[in-house]
Image (cartoon, rainbow, N blue to C red; front, side, top):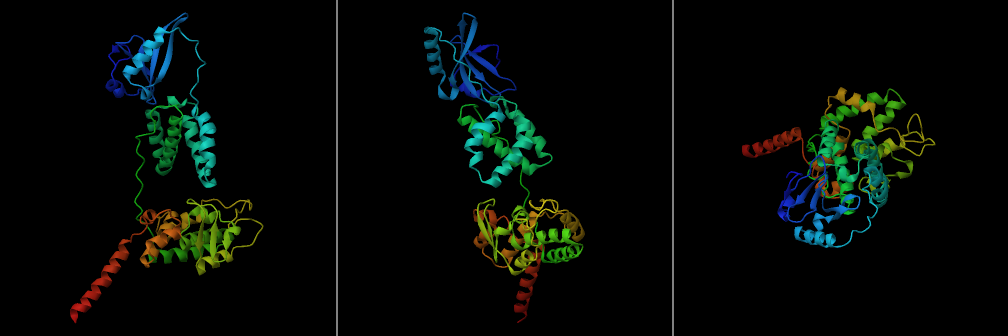
Length: 381
């Protein structure tokens, strides 16, 4: 609809109004001064324009979601028949950064686990606040979110998904407080996740183990990284759970982690995993794998040795996280029930574990060969 002409407003016509790059108003032909204001965020509200001593004055009657056309006309008629009240001080819609560091932070951020707050803080500081911080909440349009998400997705599709989910939650909370109408992040589909189909075969595990031995022989710095890689494979832990492991969390044959992605959990240790932990140098650092530069901190999550070793072994397509995948898949192949594997990995439900519980092509081929040989033997009888 053109913002310059009047139309007979109906509930259906109002529902069809779509947001544009800039705010616009559609005026009713039946009730002079009554219009619908449509913001770039998708929010719609009834407005009344009437003469005042200093010219004309626009008054907001309320959101479209709270009253239909006929009710808005009656409200408009009642206000036109009554004296003009003194204008109330305008209540400005907060900027995105003000809302995030104020209302949202108090209700949502502060109640999250420390690890969740750390992830949120990183996304806010690096991505969301630079993109949307200076804008009023109701000036963030779907087109703005789409451009930002597409640009972010070109370099980090997974992180872009996490940031989009956080933005959607923030804007939902802003909508509940009446700052925006429709959520501008709604309707944007996240990037598809890659299929989890890669894990190390038995032969690849053997080659990796040999390569780690060669690296560990080069010195203390390489030995520490090699032991971290081995522990990831032996325990199925997430990278941060091992890299940032504290000595206070090691209890003999068990790791007792106070804070993980799914909350506190215990991880049983096999003989080889215990041996690796026991041979770590005893220092004043609270961490099992302290930073070489600052022992009061854990070493960084980047392991240069891993990049070198996976090229040497010929497994360039394997990520560090795939070692966790390998642990789970080999557990299933060795007959460990999926619910038990789920507990081992610290999954909140077995549906997550089923993404890991599949076999590689070589294992399927080997199984088919064994079955074929058995049936062939029976047929020869």
